[in-house]
Image 1: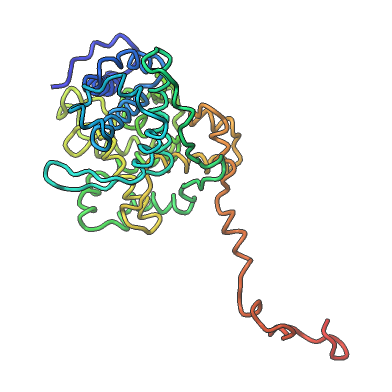
Image 2 (image 1 turned 180 degrees about the vertical axis):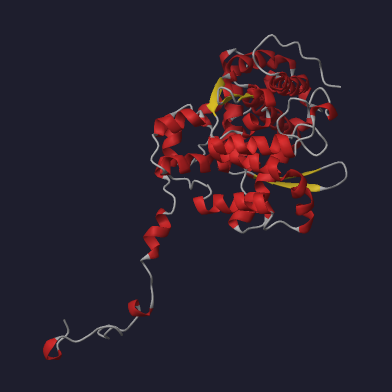
Length: 391
């Protein structure tokens, strides 16, 4: 049974509840870790957002588990909670470098004997390195270890701004995606049986993502009460606990009306917890992050002509919104404000990514037969000028 919410803020109860769920998971991990890290937990509480804090705690727990399973420390300690500050003080920078290298590719066997292989790219490795670095810097600062070994951590090369390919749908792919959610074209017979009951909801999801570039959590937490059509706006709750008011255009107004009036379950059939939720499953419960991801992957895979597993995530539709807005000549600073980028350099990555640039470059750069003829051989359409001389 979910906890009761006694909410004295402007945030909707579902937003407060989700934040509480994250903090509860943080507390559970903290209980598994050694008691001498209590100051580290306080440090994270004061400096990081809940999801960042949770990611750091998961990484630290994984690091400690690695020490027990993959190093000699496992011969002295039987559980993570038994690890001491002295054990960490005995570690060298190379031990952490070995851990980061281990994280590149490893496998885990569960209780049923099923082996799962994990492969991490540089972005994941960089975050794990950051998590462990913050831990050791804190331990050194508070005198729990004798030296700061983080200077000896090997660098992880990350792409420079503009070096990484931006993944986003092109305008024609966006139209194909929207056409598939309206007509059902490209869906399997099994998918169509669900589409007939969710087409208006799914259309609203896709339009909200490509119009406003919403983050997944911002979309998932939306309520009916978030929308004020008299004022032509709706409210979302962003990272760092920030409220943001977004304008509503005609496209969103129509899609919202279709979904609520033609498809969404009536309020009297819903539980108290779900009555205000905007996006509902067929069971009448608020859609989860995972369910929204699956919906987006399905329709983006149709637009790109690929398998469902290769469809784009909601974050790629955020990139689609950014590149489309900038491609239409909108100010980079206005797009930064809309997407809630903390730094304009993030928005500039999308400004540098011009849709169809590569195609336009290559379109008139063909290697046809006329380019491959032997030296001195005239082209088929060459004509002779006066006196038989080539002009």
